[in-house]
Length: 115
Image (cartoon, rainbow, N blue to C red; front, side):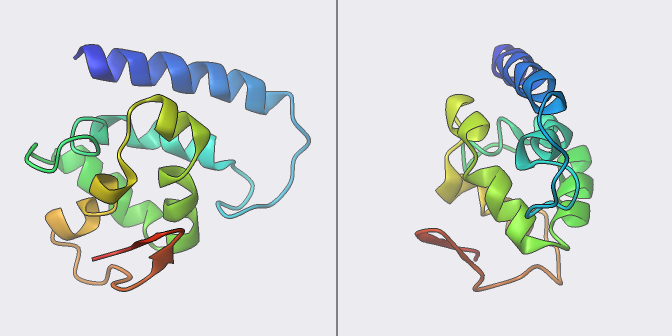
């Protein structure tokens, strides 16, 4: 619970900062990776601990965002994810742990590869 509260607070600040920026399309379309990361708050524990259960709400959001693997990658490698204690190598296992059949296996995400 403490981890999720920290995650929400940090992402709230990032979202406020993002509202002041000029609208531009990026990896996640009109929304920034930080804005999209807010949708993945339920994934916080599972993105830090590979043995943690992945909540169904997290799997639903990852399945939606995962349709655009460059967005998912941008979220996992974002400064807000790092500041929240997200471990990219663990976070990128969530699509597999959710048993998402059409996940982008082998997609390169910085120094990581989606399993």
